[in-house]
Image 1 (cartoon, one colour):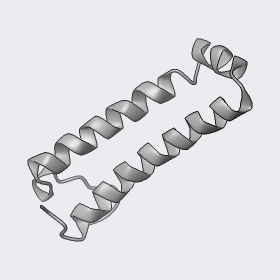
Image 2 (tube, rainbow, N blue to C red; image 1 turned 180 degrees about the vertical axis):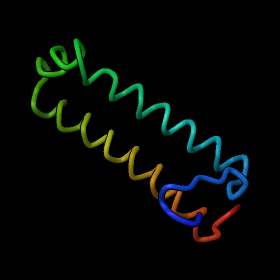
Image 3 (cartoon, one colour; image 1 turned 60 degrees about the horizontal axis):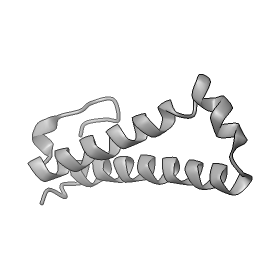
Image 4 (tube, rainbow, N blue to C red; image 1 turned 90 degrees about the vertical axis):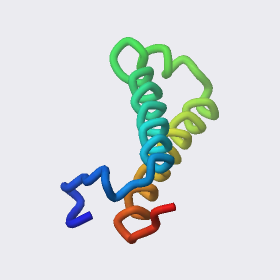
Length: 77
């Protein structure tokens, strides 16, 4: 990828694109439950559940980021 603001789908294999779409969809769904009305429900959970949920969101974001970097470094499979 030329820079962080450029996305070229041709730099990815179909499997990589599928994985990135899956992970980003999971992250969007997870974060949707943490805002608006969902935030009130989230606050009811124990501190451990809240921390683990945020940990999951961070892991998903990192997997997406790493997948994008892998492609930009020529890591096509």
